[in-house]
Length: 262
Image 1 (tube, one colour):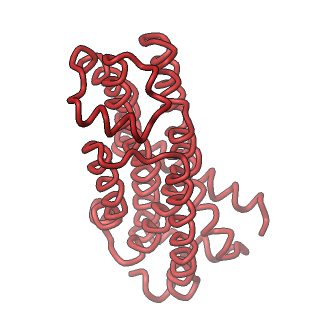
Image 2 (spheres, helix red, strand yellow; image 1 turned 180 degrees about the horizontal axis):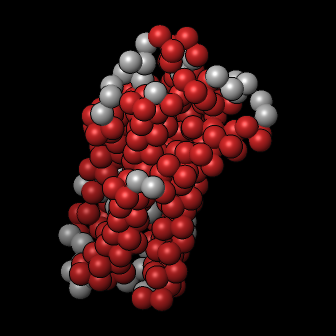
């Protein structure tokens, strides 16, 4: 694989993305919401202590929160719920970019011209995957850093410890990129079969369903997933992504593109 060719594909796709205002709006708005909303929720619920049973369940699973005052425990519980939403960001952004990029190439028939060059299929697939994956992962990380900074400014150092503990670090820096890779795989597979970006996003968006389930479980205080759980989830997601990449490589092969992508 030639890195210069892969980077050329990435640069080409990013140029196309920057010219798509609707796609840019889709990418830009949620990070702002996800930075501000947890802080608002934390401020709103701070004056309302958790119900006794939920507080007991929470402290049983997170004994490191025992030093928090009741108001801080409520804020910590509320803020913790948003970790799952930070995992959704590297899921939907790559899916959106991959869907628009690949389907745009299909409708304009521009991939045929690209394949007329000496580019290898693996290089093309790697470039397309990176061009979709990197923005989602980097935006997710930047949004997380902004949340940590604002938490330090607006709240006590003890609450900063909540958003920099092992569960957040494993979720944001391990499971997040893994989910992003799975999102790219879903975008490649679905976009090879449909001709509308919104349809591709709706079908590929099924990968967010397990994250919603995790959010519901955590909100009930039944289980507060720790770092080990997020590491295990990342390993499972990467294994699924590897299988999906094999299928995506077949759908993205030269013969498939030239004979079936119509």
